[in-house]
Image (cartoon, rainbow, N blue to C red; front, top):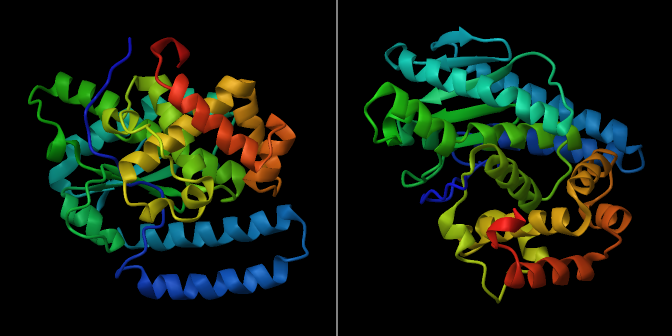
Length: 308
């Protein structure tokens, strides 16, 4: 059964640069420039290895910063949290395990080692970890190998334990952020922002029935261009529209060529192709054809219930 849940758009897995990360960002930027110069004429697999190395270094840096927090471990994750948030941490960990097998089987991927989750007890604390403004409303963020989650107690209005777990499973960020992680690892970080957001929303809907009602209602011309969605996703005037269009573009891929094409595009990105090259190879559509195709489909078919 389709569940349409009204919510604000989660800002997730984008470019969470801010005050806290400024010093780290400068170091990483220098490393990326050096790697780009070194890898310009080197095979894509080696470029991906360089990205993976930096991602793991950032992940280690992030985890070191949680040394004062408590830790719980499950089969596939560990979570860092404040002592007073143990109940919420147990819920988040159980929900993450619930989605682990379906997501990994969907993408035929097995991570190495346990996935780190960091639990934040307030929006302010989560936003501060990225240097974001205080009014950002993310419930979860994937970045550089780890998942950050806002405590369910902050936003779930239900009071009974069973209902809290139900709401967090359906409306929470775990399936979404875990999909971001998988796409990042499978592609070696080689993907447009709109694409990973579209794939994460698509997988989230399949597993939970959750969709951003506001985003689905925003699919009306004129659309953002693919250039803008690729180059300026996080700074588009309406994040609601950007998210809705990213999901529509991914759904068009599935409609046009089947889910196998979606996984093949991810594979081609992992081999070093850019998205336009992958679309030509997998979908037989060049950049202009793909843009016109998904926009036309979004206007005529995107939210007919039987097409999801």
